Every structure is written in structure tokens, then in C-alpha cells.
Length: 189
Length: 189
DNA sequence: AGGCTAAATGTTAGTGACTAACATTTGATG
DNA sequence: CATCAAATGTTAGTCACTAACATTTAGCCT
Image (cartoon, rainbow over all chains, first blue to last red; front, side):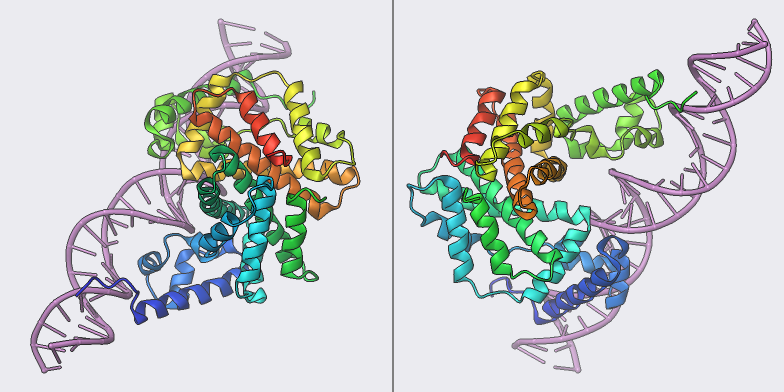
């Protein structure tokens, strides 16, 4: 029998309980005020078990599953465009192709992230991986590697900033915030 | 007599010794392998004294004194240009106006930073402040605040990435690396 | 030179994120 | 129901960083 890759149902349940409990505590008291020990005891597990399900405290808030999709769409953009425009266009296309996430949940996470300098750093760190995926796609499409890397980093930093701005507000649609950022990054503003 | 603002000579000497010792240790063993305790004992001081001179371990590597200058030059760029181009132009102008730093020292620091994920995060975090300074200058010059913030974040992320790329190489002049990044960010590529 | 005072440094004790090694429980499966 | 692996627990430790309080050092005035 091959090694079990998919997590057990039990494991998945524990993980979900940790996440749920932690986000609620963060939203109420602030990320930095809630220790891992407090989360663990609220869930009814040991600290050690927490770290078996999440590699770090910040992994509770920072997560970013869209990289491959964005890389794919960026790779398909017309090569004549400047790099920034190709990436922005790819992000726009990927956004249109993905099921719209639950804005309330995303906003909760991003608000938590925006409120803590520690977490803003971790969030930016996470964009490094998105940028790398997109860089690779551009290079595969013939772009110069250093230029691709710089352009991808810049666009994702800008998009991340737009998400943080959006999270802080109540009067803005997620799609509009994204579109505004992409316009800036395409040089339209 | 007014309160002494400037640090004492003794304090400045201690600070310099810490910095020197630490950078040498980092360059030899890697940032994450060198504990604060090790730095302190190499210098011949207590850990506590270390933290009196530097707020955190990463402050030894991450430092960034050019913000006001860049904000000033960005504020002077022609308002008709797109935001990215204004900021890129301002960075270019500021770079021309500043005494060229000792490339070897800068490279050492950036190499240390590039080699550790922790530190790359801290470096990016530090660019947040540059971006804010420039954002304020743009807003003062009439730009829309959210757009300015996104553009500034993107440009500084790109420039930072260019510096990290440069540090990894031996065959590239600092000015050329910067110029290449600015060209990308202006949409010229 | 000799003492005064403030800045610099040291000591001790603690918190919080994380890790390693090893023991125990739990649950699905034959 | 016995079994075996996955999940969890326990204990002990490291490292960055902080707080409170004691001690030393160095410039300065008489």
C-alpha cells in the first residue's frame, strides 16, 4: 500500500478547528496579542500539535493558492507588450477565471494581516513565491530572466498592497480594488 | 545644558564594533547560524548591551537612509507622467545626487540579506518605509493616495529586487542594475 | 588629584515562537 | 477484538527579545 499522502479526516478536522479558533481570536484581540499557547488551549490541544498542523503562527493568516493559475495566464499574454503590462494582464485574466472567493473571509484575514507589522512582512514574503512562479512562466516564454523577476516582484507587491488597502475599507469591491491597481501598474495612471 | 541627543563617543564605538564583528560573522557563517549571544561574546559585551544598540538582530543588515532624498526628487518629477514613471524618474535623480556608496560594503550586506529568507523578508519590510515617504510626497503633489501607495510599493519592490540580483553577481555595476530595473518599471521593456 | 553624576553596561529572570526525542493514545482495519 | 500506524502528548531545550534593578565607567568641576 502506498504511503498515505492525503491527510486523514481526523487530521483535517483538527486543522480546521485550529484555523477557525485562531482567526476568531486574532480578529478579536489582534494577532500579536494571541499566543500559540492560547490558541492551543482554546482548541484543546497541545502546542506541539499546533505546530504539527501549521509550520508557523503566521501560516494561519498568510495563504496564497493561486500561483500556478496566474503563471499560466501570464504566460499566455501577448509578447509584444511591456513586461508589466503582460503580468498585469495575466493577473486580470486569472482573476476572471477563478471562482470569486468569499470576500468576507478574505477581508477578515487581510485585516488581521494589515494590522500587524510582523504579518505584513510575512504577507510580502509570501508574494515572493507568486512572483517566482510568474517569473518562470515569463522566462519560459522568452523573457530576460532578471527583467522578468523585477517586473513580477513589482506587480505582485503592488497587487498585494491593493489588497491590503481594500481590506481596510468597507466601501470598495475587491474586483475594483484589483482593477485600480492593475491600471496603475500598466502605466495608465 | 540641553539634553544630549548625539550618542556618546563611547556608545558610537561600541555600536561600530558590534556592527563590524557581526557582519564578518554573518559573511562567514551565514546570518541564521550566528546567534546574538555569539556576536555579543565575540565583541566582549553582554546580550543586553547588544539590544541597547540595535533594536533587533536584522537591524544589523537592513538599513536604508535615503528615504527623504528620494521623496524629494520624486515630488519634483513632471506631473504629466504616469505614476510609475514619476517614481522611477525620482529614484534615478536621487541616485545621481547621492555620493556613490562603497559598492563592496553594500554588496556584502545585500549578499547576507539575499542568503536568508528571514532577512529578505526584513529587507522588503524596510522598503515599506521608503514607499510611504514617497507616497506622501506624491500625495502632496496632488496624486490620488491609493494609486500613489500602490505605485510606490511596486517601484520600491522592483528596485529592491534589482539590488538583490546585483548582490548575487560579480559582473554587474550597481548603477547599471538600477537603471535596468527602472527601465522595466517605466514600461520600456 | 578626587569626588560627583549621568551614561553605559551588567545580571537575573522571564516570555513567546519554535524544535527534537521519546512516550502514549486513538481509530480504522483485518 | 487485536493490531498497527497515525495523531497526539510530554519534556526539555534554543533563540530573539524585554523588564527591573544593580554596577561600573568616564567626563567634569572644584
